[in-house]
Image (cartoon, rainbow over all chains, first blue to last red; front, side, top):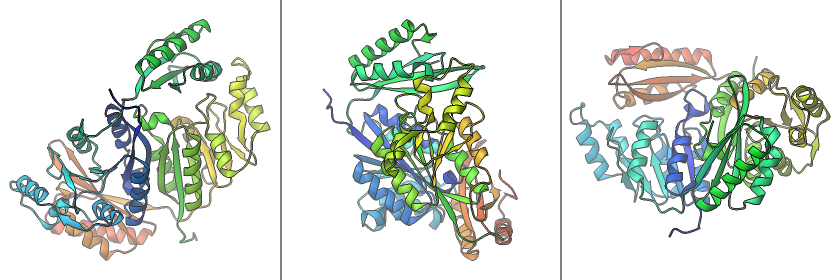
Length: 252
Length: 252
């Protein structure tokens, strides 16, 4: 039996390129999805520039208000990669070279021109940290306390999340069921609100769209209780059908 | 002549669907790109759930630390659309029905089944607010003080940004030039750092990729000073060529 306690995480996305619009972030959606599967809710995301003070302030706030904090970005070999330094400073610990990370990099670069001073930057961690495996590019992620420092490149972050799967304590996963309806959400707003109030263990989100010249919406029912979820979804489906709306028992 | 003062904005993305990973955010990149063109720098983004307290806390923090605050999401007709209420509460003003917004909605829905109570929710604004035109779906965006409340649906947010183009005071736009290089970024890390230190009016970002079985990186030089930007980009190009690297004078 899993606990009813709700576990939460914060995510800090680090990088000028996200704020400038140059790079489309992919990590918010992938970390949020992965956390749901671990029974952990993503409660807040912040995106900040490659700036020591901005990173430190966000780290201090988000790790205090959540069970876990994940960060993405800024752990490569170049001068703008300052995540490790900023987090170490925020935690009040020095930066040290992790012997195992150095060994991993030496192995990885043995056939790729050898380890340089720049590449060794990727073995630097806040003192007391453990490594998070990355079986693709050598450079590992870093865990220190409740802070998990991941790569910014989405497919490398994916590998680090895989290495962490099932390792973190969480609660019940947030379950969801989606019901689609070819109607403007404004026509069903009252019905949705009434249904949600009748099912206190559930939330209902409404996500409108405009497609093929027609308007519609998907209604997502969410709950950590499977029985409550099914009861709410069935009730919503019935109410929509009774209102004579073109409804589907799944996402459209 | 434009001022050297740097104008900044915060962005608050509101919605459970972004945090759960269900919906891929598109507004961070589009707002960031649009702000650059207005000479305003996106300094911080937060993503929070559909929760009065979380929205209020973020609004208070971000509007105090930036010249402007933009929000996206939570202004539709359904029960989970609480952005207006949360922002009004954070600003300490009541929510009122804006007569012009009501007229716009009455016109829009005249041939679409008429205005209902749910649809009229979209005419509610914090007292003292002005409207931001939305020529697509009727429901307008909202401006109150330095806070700009936009739709969450990206193409409707686009229309609201278009309506605001050239309306906000900003500084010099942040200019950029990109130089691509088919080399691991770890091989050029020292060279990049030295180049940046030699050009104090510029920042250089390094964005590695893995494509067609080869590694490479794009180096983005940014500055508000066109002359400084060109000098730095030329210097970087020359240094990369002198290092014998396969370099391109543009993004690869």
